[in-house]
Image (tube, rainbow, N blue to C red; front, side, top):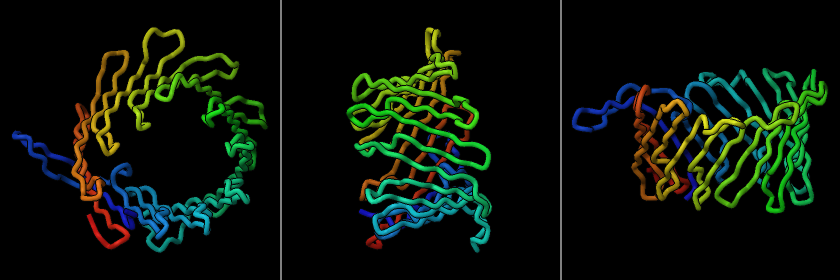
Length: 278
């Protein structure tokens, strides 16, 4: 069922001695405090994240995003646009250009190119001072296996990554230095639904990863447990518990941290296109 309005509010959580959760003061965290409004086609047209960002979006008849505008959330009159992006598409409905303005002044233009299979193979960014080229390569399955970013004005190689897929549930990303020498790699594993369940970062030559993140998901594909460890032996965990509405969307999320952080309660109110609310 299509969502018309999706609003979340975040609160500090107080856990009593008998294990009961109670709401404390409201936290305006952009990751958990948001108001999202959708049009009849299910496209996001208005998004406010915490006290930091307020975006407005417009679309064409094909559902392609034509523009985005970023405002201060406190600017209710929408008189001061921080950043504006304008998009252009070809006859295949592929994005071919993005022009960015900051405070009303042109910042950059990005042009996109595609191969015969519809894969984006290059992004050329032009600013007042430099030009940057982002190049991508794909395998026969349409998976990106190589990407590199270069300042073509100066010749500086900013980054280069390659990806090797061992199967549908594991890939290895390798990072290269400007001289072309590999210096670190990342192992990513997925479950059968495509959720990322394991990420390990390791420097070339080291016997073990310097960071490992393991994640578990529920039947709704929502994260319920995360374990982060490092080679110094430190371990941090986050536990998520949810309450769902009749449509399978969560309407309350509790986040319990193992150390250092304030536990959180996130309440979510959903208004569906048919007028029902969660």
